[in-house]
Length: 350
Image 1 (tube, rainbow, N blue to C red):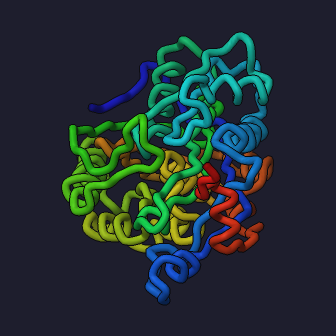
Image 2 (image 1 turned 180 degrees about the vertical axis):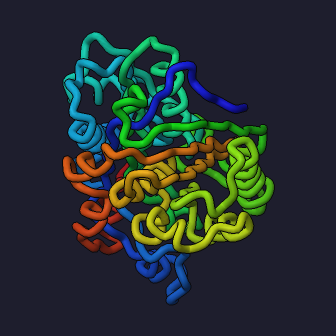
């Protein structure tokens, strides 16, 4: 499905957040395999005892507001996409809206679609603003990802994400030229309501899951826009691990120079709903006016959202208004597995 709003829109503000704590993959291997088994990521971000999807979303949203330069009461919607909402029944969106001063005259809601819940919220923001129903809408992709102890997912299940304010194209730091969605009923990763940790269908995670959606979504976007891989200065794909996006990008003909700035998974892990979105925030931190960006998310279940973005002159001023994604990544504090178990409440005391 191709999406192009009636009213031109763009990103008017963005902001990221990554917790300071880091658990090396080698530490997980030490505990579970008693060896130096190579980890798929160097280390992953771990939320502190007082951090959850709501608190991290507030931090990212405040950074986005600083870059947008608008009053939070101008936000007509506050939407949070996540796999790890703190409450089963109580919206994260209302907590964030209240904390940033957007209440009461705003629409708040939570979104779910595995790892593309954040870009799904962005699609809704584009429609909301692009239809003329609102001038500004905030969409967030944020997670404190879960992984069963000793499971392959535990190595990569990180924490963090990003927030984006969609508004009129005339005020945008990056114009959203076109979006595209590509979905199917492919079960590669799931979690039932009564279970704490997600399950995955092993071989289905790559084909037909990730590669069966990310690659055709990117190909269709380039076909519709009349572009080629070298038409883009930067490209960001969803990052469940370093291997998947690297393989997909290489198959499509993109070069490491195009994806290096947005490939963060080895440093912070897979931030799930925030994975592609935090990669985009890192790219926007260094992007220059006139540069073109392709972003493709992926969510198990399964589907991808693709975005064609054109950076404007306003990016230069906006980059100075809030901490960069790299600022958050650099302020790391290493922890061991025992601290991780305590902080993630993985040890049952019943």
